[in-house]
Amino acid sequence: MQNLKILAIESSCDETAASVLSGGREVLSMAVHTQIPIHMQYGGVVPEIASRSHVERIGSVVKNALNEANMTLDDIDAIAVTYGPGLVGALLVGVNYAKGLALAKNIPLIGVNHLAGHIAANYISHSELVPPFVCLVASGGHSHIVLVKDYNTFELLGRTRDDAAGEAFDKVARVLGLNYPGGPLLEKLALDGDKTKYKFNAGFNSKDILDFSFSGIKTAVINLMHNAQQKGEDINKADVAASFQNAVVSTLAEKSVRAAVMSGTGKLALAGGVSANKALRGEMERLSNKAGIKFYCPEFKYCTDNAAMIGSAAYYAYASGRRDELSLNANPSLPLNNC
Ligand code: KG4
Ligand code: ZN
Image 1 (tube, protein in one colour):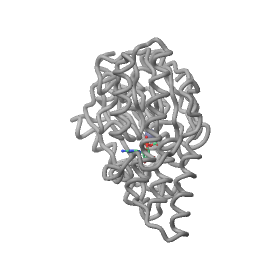
Image 2 (cartoon, protein in one colour; image 1 turned 60 degrees about the vertical axis):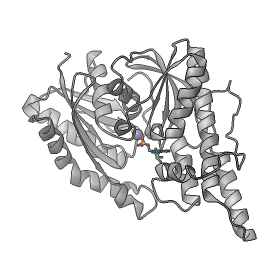
Image 3 (cartoon, protein in one colour; image 1 turned 90 degrees about the vertical axis):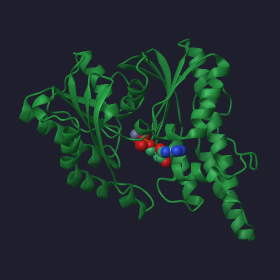
């Protein structure tokens, strides 16, 4: 079981990815084809173009992952694939490819929840991390505070009521004239800015409410930029970026540390694309230390979408007896319940 070889596939959004793992935490290979340059010219992900690019690339990405691991399909014990949440057309490419491989090789198929995958990225980077712990999952589509009760059982403690954190970063970045994906570019711009220049407030500001709201803060930035434009005033965009990032990071960090304290687990992890944000990692670490909580976050290469994290989550699902039928379907709004 510990040496189980899993080939994992991820195609939920704009990355076609495959990875081979040995057991749940040893990554033997990782192949990723990013579509970012393709979608950049449209300022965001175009779902139909994403699906077509996945179809074109999935064969070579899987081949690269097997080659890099010095393996063929005959060495693989199980196939894992993201089946939701995500873009339905994009998910379907991975799900059908995985089903084809499982059928051809007569090996088990394991459907994986993309968010469970993001959480599992922490298992790869931290061999000592075991549930229970609290995890903040902040991506382009989700901002969840999750109690990870065991490897396959999750309880949602808090969530965004409107925009996800990554979505807010992307939308504000666009208003500041930055390209897609806005998060990393906004983070870079913020380095030159004064984070105390503007006072932006995220909604549900009380630490005791574990839900988030980011649409108000996004609107505040849009209004500030439009008003300045109408009055012909010059605004230092780096100051706006730094102030916006500071408001989002503070609310994410305060609420997740509060949830970790309330949980009694003594552990807090960070996951999802926004976990690549250094200001967020730093603030979560600072507040965790202050509260006596041990803080974990994935290495940068496992923060944004990849298939290694899907393989890790699949291993623990497999270990608990999970096997999927070839009738497995993509579910674009798959909830994070028991996986
Ligand atoms: O998890 P992910 O790769 O894809 C989804 O599952 O959505 O997350 C992508 C999101 C995007 O919104 C992107 O702007 C954001 O993560 N992101 C960041 C950073 N890197 C990626 N946001 C803030 N700072 C970053 N460094
Ligand atoms: Zn993701």
